[in-house]
Image (cartoon, rainbow over all chains, first blue to last red; front, top):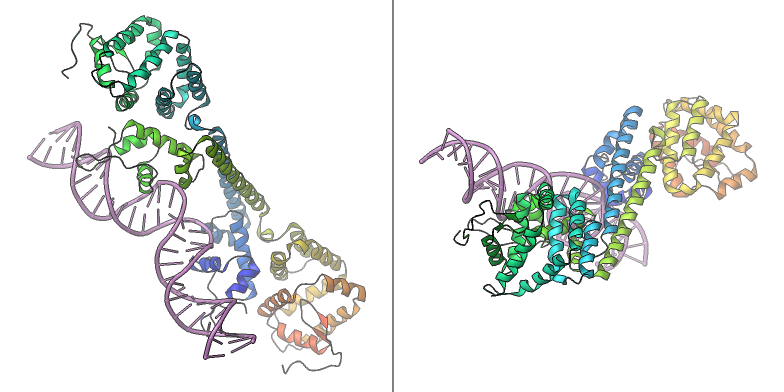
Length: 264
Length: 264
DNA sequence: CTTGACGTTGACGCAGCGTCAGGGTTGCAC
DNA sequence: GTGCAACCCTGACGCTGCGTCAACGTCAAG
């Protein structure tokens, strides 16, 4: 007769595993000797080896039981089932690896490659790093909501960067980040922004409108801007006084008659 | 400001996951509103998306924290590390699949293919099924202890099967399983067994001795025999009276002077 | 008699949340 | 005003397959 540790070592499992199998009813409890020790016969070793074999093949313990008592056809069925599961898990891990490989460094975390390239272009153009970080975070949000449209958005953005006046606006806005509310230079910035907006032609607007962000997403992006730039609120008010509303999704106010929006 | 479910849905995770990240310190707890609800800003969405991105890439949550704050080189290092882990897991699953594929049906469970073939040969020779099951269990034990030697063992066994007298002994032993202790036909069986043993030449014995099972393993196999065949003990005694000891590892007694072994 | 290696049960720990339970809040429709 | 659904909160258990104490009894050897 064998002790539990002998049984375990013959079967190539740990003593703890054997007790676990007893606890879950996978392996029947054997008789005890006078001092309460479990005593096993050789058949238990065989049974345990078969359990181990299935377990090591990735069969969940909950299914091992049925498999051991299954007929050939059920067994084949179950095996096919488990194989499917294993294949799926392998697929999953492969996807993980792909993703991991893409996560080379900071920016690419949670961004598709074209967006990373876009951020790189901003760097080339000498846009300050904190602006780029703001852009990056915004695009992370967009990429999470509309992954399928990212390529298009980024393409549009890169086209805009060809216009030097857009680039200079970017540079200017970086300064604005540091300004305190009430800074006297703000109205001039608002003027220049609005001038840019007015210069955009009708066809381009329609394209934007078609592929624009949802209002929810635009609100979210606006709130990021408002959270991180002290004068953001003031700047948006100034722009609104000039006939435009929003920030992420800038739109002409419906009533072109100039009205003050300060009062709320 | 966002509620927890809005945050979660923007980031593409469950509310429960967000709370879990709070609990583990992965995502900082935000401020609460008057009624104790958590309120998030857009930056939290970005942070959560980055966490999700890493988590979905198979990074353990315990490492996500460090990765988010890591510099480029550390990040690359960690990513390489995780990729290694993923590769290893994939390897593991592939091994599982291989094994699963081999587990076609009953016999092959926990046995190498050559052993399965051997059992098939026994079937061909008309050996009764319960004898084959006994053989199978014995070989499962052997395969678990000495997997590297299985091929050799099985080759020897198959050679033995070429001898028709060995086959007839097998058939005879199947009857013996049902006999009750004291059956008058037992001595004759013992005689025939011993005759077979005596016919084995010296060279063959030496080959057996070299590649034999360990005493422990032989004892284990003997005990299986003893457990499952009522007259096993008596048969072994009869064989011992004829100058041989054991069952799995039959050996000539050291003192060829015939002594009774019944008394213990 | 001591010591060390074994055996026993019972319990917590792990990863990453899912899923109640048992409350309170909010917002909308009636 | 009131009901209802849909949120929010905390706290706790569940899942998988054991590893790892803890606290104690047994056995064999020196």
